[in-house]
Length: 168
Image 1 (spheres, rainbow, N blue to C red):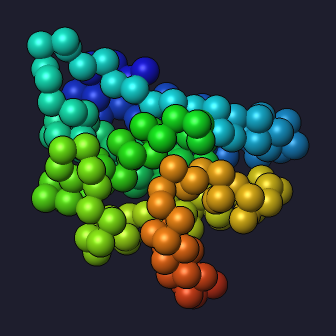
Image 2: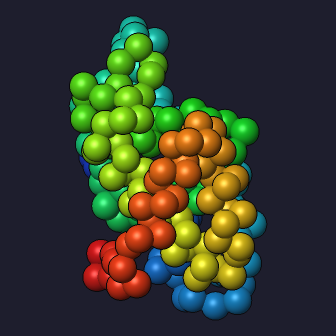
């Protein structure tokens, strides 16, 4: 769970410490620890009961998720596949507001496709760095999305140049 205090302070540091390979010494123990976290994370936000908006409609949470994506675009690597809510929340917060309504994400929206492709690329990159099977990890992480959409995004990611994302 992410407290509203952390959201308001734009404090993504706890995620960086827990899930970033850069946060600690990059060694076999750190790699093993990160691999064990794959598919085990559910991200939630402590929103007051009086606020009935979905989290992706709350500007402060949208901003927080954008900061997480800036620091850790591979965070979906850690999302629990049986909980499609974390992946949906991630993509909905990154999408333009017009692309998400009534709990549905417009998968034809160019920005949704672009954010999903960037997340998939970053997830694949982390999986590779940790010695995981890239295709298996992506199939698991992105399983909550419709297969035609995932195939479209995978096709785009396969076309990225080899040095895409370096320096980011």
